[in-house]
Image (cartoon, rainbow, N blue to C red; front, top):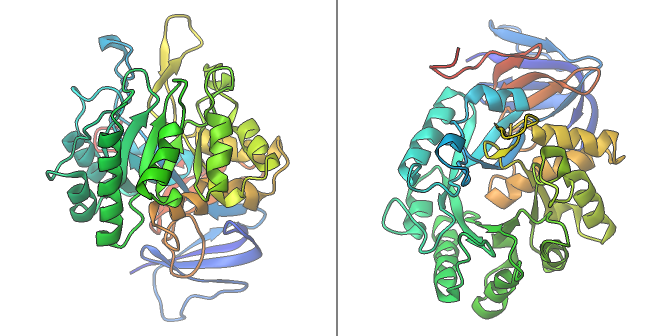
Length: 390
């Protein structure tokens, strides 16, 4: 077993812990404090000089298309699979994969296999069962079984208010909600229901129906893509109401003019507006929707959304919106970990937590990434690559 010592960095855990050392062994953090010293008789100690640098938790991205989104752009628009180095460069040490619109060419079995590939490579990879449609596809015979029996499965995904998959059969949606509620009880873990909220006029109406008619706990439902412009959908105003009921709302980083989608509200602006409306900061998360396609600068071309936009927008929350580092980091670290049932293990720098950390350079850019106690990027260069990456 080797030790890793981060020396003298300004640690945001995400709370501001000041200038301290962090000592990790294998994949866990052992201690944090000033002037830490490894045992005198311990042979292998890797020391990272973090003096003058900020040290933040590894980011947690709960909405990543590991297999590529393939979001309805035809055969030539099928987005390629994600590579582990894409996550490493982004400072994302925990990612949750899911299916998109393409459910014929990309399946849950393929998603689970890709999840194991990324996890074996060195980051923490998890997955959502289900998909856009109802009845929800599954691997074990039921969504409930997937969540209970498959360690990599955190919860289930479905779409509402989506023109391709409107899923207007409330009884089918209620049945899915019942399965995840049962899974939560049986597994003793969060088992959230991730709801892709599309552009149709009803917005999040089905979410409120699940709470009122089925008794579903608000904290078990996670509506995503809530930063749609008010001219397009009522979802942003509905998200404020939902958060006041105790639910968490997920802002999509690529949904906005910066990434070629003018029908979205810029994610930084969306965070500011939610906070101004009195939404509890703990009820806001950010995710990327990485590996879906968006318009490229060259007319007629597409590009894949990179995982790096998560830290891009965390940094923008500090440098443009004036939030503190603890405030900016929470939606991409501890808040997400709580929703996924990973609180205390992910999204935090503390004794007992996984040794997932990112060291920033003097310009607050990602310099060094540590995933499960292993240095996977140093000096801005990924040290971790997939088997077939060049």
